[in-house]
Amino acid sequence: MQFDEAKNKFVQTWGALGSQWGINKTMAQIHALLMVSKEPVSMEDIMQELQISRGNASMNLRGLMDWGIVYKANKPGERREFFIAEKDLDELATKIAKERSKREIKPALKVLKEVSAVDGNTSEEAKHFVAQTKKLYEFVASADEMIDKVTEYKDNWLGKLMMKILR
Image (cartoon, rainbow, N blue to C red; front, side, top):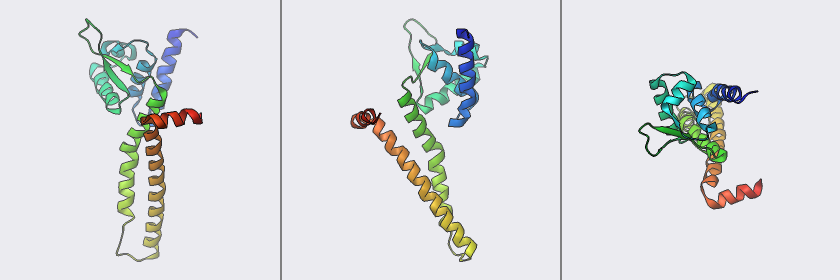
């Protein structure tokens, strides 16, 4: 397989996987392109490589920067904006976990807490509903707490040392 073909296959595959971690295909393709690029990439080059509009590139780059996994990069003597992706895979996984928790798990926890506080209805069905939603809330809260702890460990030097020892 030639380099260009391999690179294109990676970008397309990463794009398809993007929906698995909560972003759209184009955003994931831009991320993939930046992740495997040795040098910072201009918006124009991203547009050309992926055959997307300026608006689409701009919107998705802004989204990736909101996730904290893509950054603007300066090139001396250049007026164009350039972008780079987070290359450290541990850091990338940590940022994605934090963002998914913030965008998906925390709102779900809020709803579960709210619906499990149903009162006034003492039917067996209502009691069962409350019991099940409380169990689900506790389970999801525990999973979210575990994600928080793992990402906290990644953020401090002692946690990083412990993770290296555990490997």
